[in-house]
Image 1 (tube, rainbow, N blue to C red):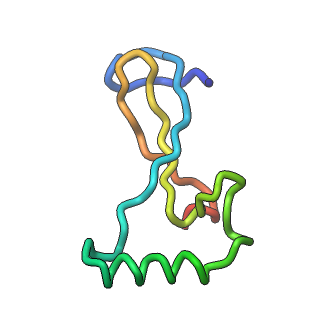
Image 2: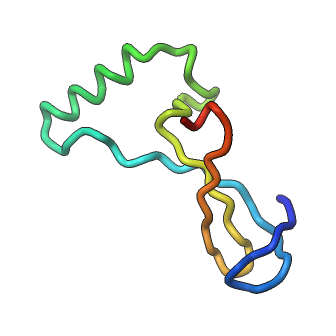
Length: 80
């Protein structure tokens, strides 16, 4: 955890990092879900994290441990 300024609390508080899956660009139908599977399957294991999540499919959030306000922080080439 790290300490940073929280806009909602108005002071420096402890924050934790959370990775969440981005919403799918594919629809909810079986055909669209199959397309999503094929896209993930052929994107290759080289772009995957140890947990099996691809950086292109995740967002990085910093969350205040006091109030719970989540701020998206996708910095760096890996989140583009």
